[in-house]
Length: 621
Image (tube, rainbow, N blue to C red; front, side):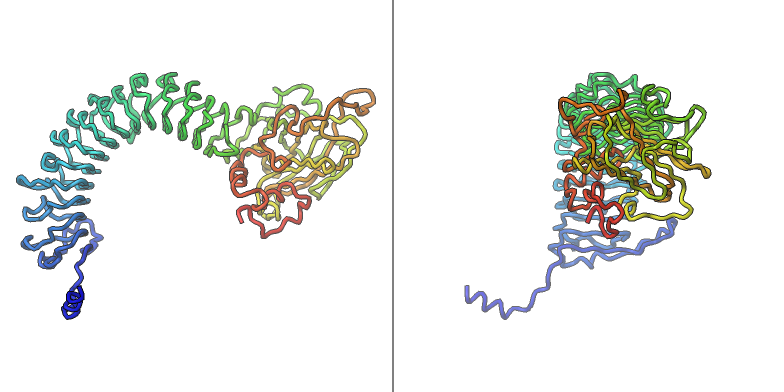
């Protein structure tokens, strides 16, 4: 071995053999120019170990005798010829990518490429037919996207026993697929999206036990095939004007389905049967852009469902109970949606995307907005409201980020009732009031207290400004604290009134928390407005129970800390305090991960010093 090493030291240095070469022609910005740069095959002589070769917008001229025969991957974008040269050595090529080529057909003769696994001829607009696939027996991926003149797929595709993916997306001239494609037991994904002339419903896809995904959006089918029975199903996403609603019989589809997409296929609620709940393996359900007004109640049985998309369903009015397993629920731009049965796990794992749902007024067990006349008469009496029958107000929904103008509405959430209406004066006889200050403190008197009414009057600020607090969190919120009992509630309503045309807004809020207040308890109540609003007056009125002399009555047992007016708020507890907010659910989700103290949120929401909150603190520092 020593002699061998010594002999090698005297050898001349070897030139390294390239394994990868990238060559680029000129980038002609003029689309009408047909000029192609060229290179001679002699440039590749000696590159015996070349494995990867990428050519962009180049013509290769000369004899291919010296062309590298060890190629495994050939990427030749904008290939300039109508077919592959006869002498081009492709026997060992595993991946052949020829996007945006001028190919009319792949090659001539009886060339067999046994090593080829990936064939990508996307955007080859001159390609009218596929090659004889019997010459490419080990293909695993066929990608023919946007080959707009492709008319047919060769029947020999039925012999590709290892084929995993067939993608003919956007092949507008393709009219049919060979029936033998149903015999491909390894095929996992078929993408037919945008093949506007293709009729595929006659294919016996129920035979394809390995099929995971079928995207047949924008095809020429008048109805969805009922023979599809696979794990992933993506179909009927219309790319043109809506056609006749498909007759979908989900009872014939395998219950092992994992993904079901029926986007934009003119699907009405009547065509979604109760049997949808039998798809116990379903994880992703996409029903966007359909004229559905609701979903079947059986959807609650889909206990593995992770993602539910109902975007742009403009006739959707109601959502039934959604399973707790759902992580993403999108009702974006469902402008008719008024009620949702539940949003389980909103504070922990659910990402609710409800933007532009401007008519949403109720999520059961969370909040409800309804006409003031429909609320309990005793509650109306406690509030001492003026005549609001002819008044309208502009309301902002912080959950959907929409505004809505209409008759006066009352909001009920967390056992708290609130209402917004136009007005600029506090009522007479308030227990406590403050002009220019955002906080009020007092000791609980020796009377039997039912609750507290909070009055906040605000208008548009003459100049835009941000306080220290709304730099941190620009949301309207009030903080109520019983310091004696160390009970703290911070409440941000889902709906609030917006000042309009110089008219101020009176926000009245009733807290029925008398059971949590004892004589002498030290109370502190403060309010923070959103940027652009100016506080004018703030008042608190104590509401007494109706009994003789209003004297406090002894109770047999202390009330639960988790109840406000009989509503359990334990899910909103933060280290013994309560953050009562639905619209910024991501605050609770993030703090459950990073910690309430480390992010600064706990001190911000429940700290004693409301005005001295430091500017430099950030909720995600």
